[in-house]
Image 1 (cartoon, helix red, strand yellow):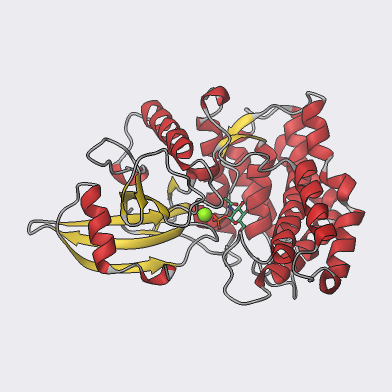
Image 2 (cartoon, rainbow, N blue to C red):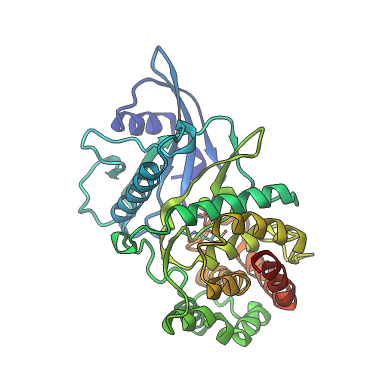
Length: 382
Ligand code: GN1
Ligand code: MG
């Protein structure tokens, strides 16, 4: 299916399955995220207009989507029960089918059971939730420290809300997601196999990752030594996964909970630094550097919520987390480029290579400024 153009009929029929009747007035593809496909849909039933987000899950990436939806339900329920006065636009409200499921499985376009093979091309997995009105999100921070501060507050609060959530209740929606030792191994495996003959072209980038392979495992070793606690974390804390109030910049709700699972606080901290406390786009190596002013703003926001929750070792790990996750992403983007761009959606042929180059430039700058990052964190926590 051309993902930009699911037909109106198709979206109407999906809405019907979720018991939303009426005519679609407006619909459009939303160009957010590299994995799933999302549409904004407004349905009129003769009385009122309902605005929805209709999403098709990429089951090549999320191989157990039913378990993933169960995770999301548990997490959203938990957050809802701990915040009694939450307004409607501060929560994700998933729609249910007649079978009371928060997802719909189709095979060859018709409803099917959960026992299908999700790797089969004829199988689709859909979900629908309320569209949050008057909200906006940021593809990059646009260099605005206030957006960074608010993002830090939002992800800090999210980590804090889940601090006592029992991780055993969740399945790993993507096994080894931030297991950087595993990531490095599978990256060098791909380099060795070089299935598309692209490795020679990326020799410089591969060399930088090789030089830093040992550093990539720093946090894994700390987990093994019992120095860092495992928490329930978001694991994909880009600023475009927060919906803000359009006018006040108040962070309303965190979206894209697909990778919520046991993880490290420093990756949730670090991934926003990677994405937004920098000077260029995710796929733009030219002029890519760490922006310490934005880093400070983000750290302020995050620590305003998490300062008293984190252990001293976790506080110490925050800056390392930013560098490790940036290196991890470089290896994932480059690995996908070498494998033929199967995982991350691309808009032009060498986008994954450029994404990797940008991440490596940022990683190297983070390493140069490691002491500065640590100093900023220290000032805020001592
Ligand atoms: C993917 O789908 P999106 O854009 O929110 C990826 C993240 C990466 C990110 C890089 C499930 O997130 O891990 O950090 O791209 N999600 C998955 O921009 O792999
Ligand atoms: Mg996303």
